[in-house]
Length: 106
Figure 1 (cartoon, helix red, strand yellow):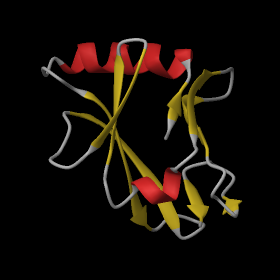
Figure 2: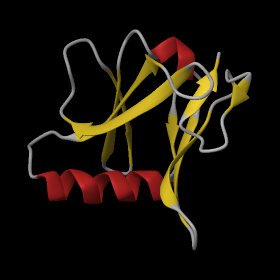
Figure 3: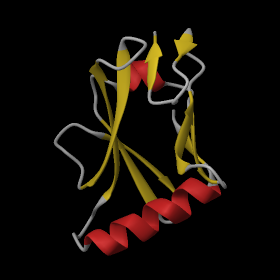
C-alpha cells in the first residue's frame, strides 16, 4: 500500500481540477533510467487498465501494476519550499536515491 499525505492529496486535487479531465489523478509508474537506475514517472491522467487505486481526502493515485512492487510501503508527500516544490516519495525499498529525489536503486 502506498500512502498519500494530506498535502499531496490537496495538490493532486488542484492539478486534476486544472487538467479538466473526468477521473484524473496522479499516476505513478517506474521506468529504467535516472541517476540511480530507476526513475519515478508522475503524470496527471486517468487510470489505465489494471492500475491499482489509492484514495485519500478526495484525491486519487493510480499505480501501474508492474511498478507497484517497487513502491510498496512508500509515502508520497508534497513540499513547497523556498528552493523547490514538488512531490516527494519516501520509498522504504530504495537502497539508494539520487540527490534530486526522482530516481532510486531497488
